Length: 268
Image (cartoon, rainbow, N blue to C red; front, side):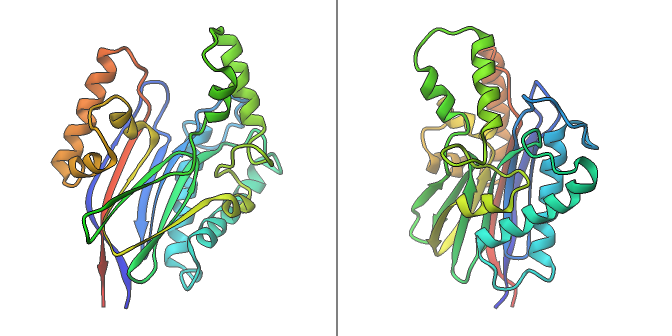
């Protein structure tokens, strides 16, 4: 049997502070959402509106190649992510050489259909919501991208300069032992991805951190309610519109928001 996806809804809205740096897609048995991390280090000048946008688009293309190409056989979710990151490393080499620290990074979740189950490989804080045939909704993500920095600062009142410098230092230390692992150009990051397997999926939503603000701000009360709201195109668009209105009301700088909702199907 060949397992694939049927699209239910897809909404992407650009944030306030930079060009669109999210991406999402699906091909063959795989689906993914990518949330490029806003540049804090000196940019490399990759051929896109921003370095994170380049990575989000290039990684989406690489994941599609893995899903539909010669490597689309028995590879598991982590192996598929590693193969895509090897492709990024190869494409980046003639453009920026061996530069890694200043190379853009992203949160990513890759969902792979494996028989009557899904595997979810996650780096950082994109969300994947899976509803099984018993109606149970499972929320999957690895960890909040800035968790370590926010924990270190605590409740102290600090200047924007101090907070910015802490975030910059955190970026420089990513993909090293004891620090946050993200999608960048190191294939070994896939080994550090959180892996979750869920049986009998019937509906799957992939969401970037910007879209998940609808939960953080209380527009929906839970992962299950979020999935309910985005389970048709009109509902997904309405929720993202409500989110933008609320962010404008509280003067919050809006991040890019992406929601992709899919239904597993058997093609033959």
